[in-house]
Length: 587
Ligand SMILES: Nc1ncnc2c1ncn2[C@@H]1O[C@H](COP(=O)(O)OP(=O)(O)OP(=O)(O)O)[C@@H](O)[C@H]1O
Image 1 (spheres, rainbow, N blue to C red):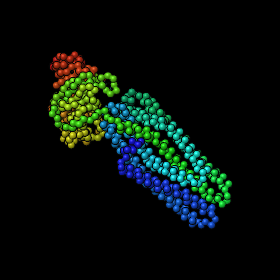
Image 2: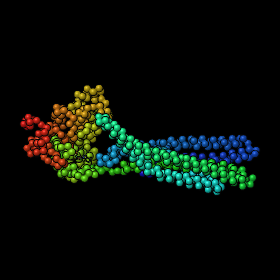
Image 3: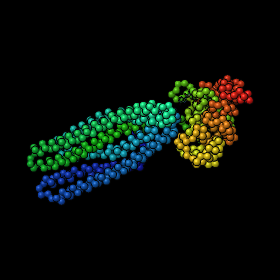
Image 4: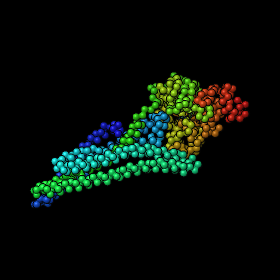
């Protein structure tokens, strides 16, 4: 929690200091009240007292109470401001941190957990700060001040108060000790609930198609029941705490009056009035004291959950991304567009086996290099090493003749137009999706967007949409067909005019004719770009300058289509399974 508080700005620490000052004023106002009550009690008991004296004391009490109210409103306003600003800053910091994570760190935390940490966990911390600022500081001051005020009023009463405070502390410590592990579980179970809900919603079509609603419901019920039971346990604990506190408070009041009664009955007549007045004042202070402890307990209840949340937030903020940024920031290098793998082997973090072994190849400026091979042989893994989604375990990946690790990630990725296997579109419109991201320039012009969309064979369907280039795109591009999504993702990569274009099986949803025209137009438009294609269809890669056949993470063959048809059995096998006899004979 302390680490989280380091995120407060100087201005907010200033506000906190103001809060502290105001709290001291408020405590003084609250603790001066009983003195007037003592005066009123004495006036009432003294024969000959005048009504206006009583009214004057009452008026002062009213003034003090109003002052206390105004001050508490100001404190609440300041606390709300400090806590909401802190929460907003934490959200920003978490978002930025997660942006810098590699897939490895994201998978370690899991996406639902990162979402819960950015939302629910921050809310827990915010709640503690807003309440803590008002109560956590006030209670100890109030308690100590109240103790000072009552110390000289009679040891019997002080002893009773001491016993009550001790009982309150014992009850609180037991309850909190029982609650802490449950609060830890509660945050993890929030992650689980969010994971199950998310999985169900994103896979809704599959769930319905397979009539798996019951199965999903069971999963949800299990997560929900676990969450509910832990919640119930913690609320039951709290439910037991409140009556215990009330019992102690009422017990103390009773003891004060009982002790008072004994003292009065054994005192001389002259002293009785003073003892009675002291008793009234004491009981007020004693209740204030217990109230201070009760408020403290209420905050202490929030602390375990908030500190679990604070730890979860700090875990993310303190995680160093596995990828270290390089220093080279230049857009223009000596060998633009050259991609080279030198004896690259790769193992996924936490996996035992190598997915890639001893991969070496070159792709020069203006060349097209393609990868083909069975599913799971490592094609996507190879190309994911170029934009540094992962780093090679052994060997080196070079872009423009420079090791990718030496570039800043921004500079490296500005050279690349990457189209992922699964088309990803964002909520917005056609233009915002195609002009997405910057290329170290001032962004993508409208003309470039239209031109990229034309090359990606999307112009017809985009112009036929209701608002053309401004047409709405739903989150994930769910209002488009698979092929349309793929073409817009391709347009996005082309619009940046990158040195290197990477297509990870990005033509699979296109019909053969569109696939062919698109590749031809692409080659024409991006004549200087190095194109790296992963494909399942021989037709898509047949014309590539170099085709690399992968088999279980190793290179099984490399060459042009013609060369591979002569030299690589695996390639021949794939070709025979996909191309007709005529197509093969026409080679
Ligand atoms: N994040 C990951 N963590 C661990 N293993 C992974 C991860 N991603 C992929 N793999 C494994 O690495 C291997 C190669 O996967 P990759 O996605 O590169 O294959 P691919 O040739 O592109 O397959 P496809 O043609 O089906 O897309 C697979 O066996 C897969 O199980």
